[in-house]
Length: 329
Image (cartoon, one colour):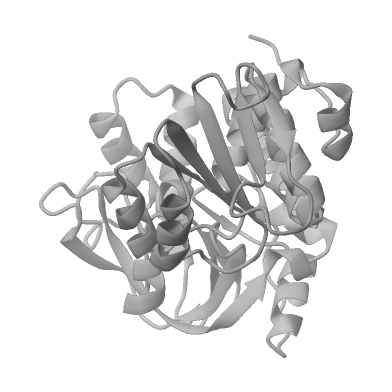
């Protein structure tokens, strides 16, 4: 038996369906693979569907599809990452390859290649060693996991298993994307280690890097105003951004959003920061708000930190020290 990582679409948007429907899915829109006999035929289908891909990209895409179609076996372990919960679903494959053209979105064949899974439990990313986090950070949609990482994951579920090592095609553009993906998760790891006060200061530092002046509240009855950002730093000039910062693993719900917006006054613009993410109901509540409101999760925070890091002051940089890496254009 092997252990495989299968990502749940961009930013893990299919992870809830993976969890609830006991499946894993990939999709490259090349059609039903039930009667495809080998990797050569898959490669031809990829070339026909994506004529603009170069040879390396065709080989990489065909390799991942081929693993899903031919190399995965019933009984193999599989994991998938939930970026909101910062956890890995861990299970075992219980079916051969299946094809459903209506899975998502309907009648487009975008996500249609399926295997059924029996989920065994979840492992928190924060509980894993740095070397295992590094292994799981690869950008590939699907890849095998080396034995050391697989052993650590399964020990969390009171199991043990050996598997085949990960092999990557040395294609520069792919490697660049791989490094960017890993760095995103590593930055998020550092953010999750911060205390609540440090995260509050980091958000304030981000807003200063974006051109605002900030006032930061300390512990006490701040009435949902952890940070106030404005052009003058006093909150007298608009735009006046009122920020609530929540640093916890659980998702924020609709009642939390209502409580926050209820404390805002005319002229305010709301920014709610939650490293644990938001329930769907909370997102709906934000969309219905009469006051301009933005919800920021850990991934959005990382993206903005990367975008504005050059404009951070020394205080903000000290909270998440980063080094710039140059790559050939």
